[in-house]
Length: 112
Figure: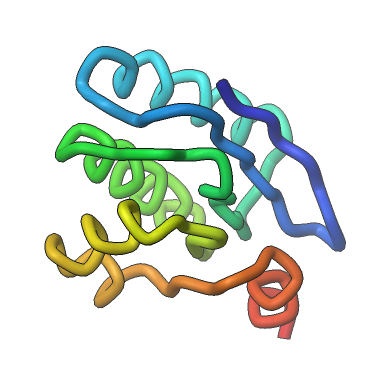
C-alpha cells in the first residue's frame, strides 16, 4: 500500500489505493514505522495513486502531519486527483498542509 524513498534528504511516501476507514489505522502504523526507521523529518505524501479518501483518510494525513511536526519537520501533499483535492478543500486540510502539483516542486520547497 505504501513505499518510502529518499530524495535529497526528503522522504517521499507513495500511497496506493483508497484511504478509508477499513485500512486507515493499519496504514497509520505502517507509515509511522517506515518514517521512524528512515528518520525522516521532511515528508512528501505522494497521493498520485490514491483514488479516494474519506474522513478516516483525512485522519491518516493529520496523524502523519502531527507525527512529523513532533520532530520539528514538515509534511506536504502532492499529486492529488480532483476527487481527493475536493475532499481536502471541503475539510480545509489545505489551510494547514501545503499542497503541490508535483514531487519535484514540493522537494524544492522543502529543501529551501
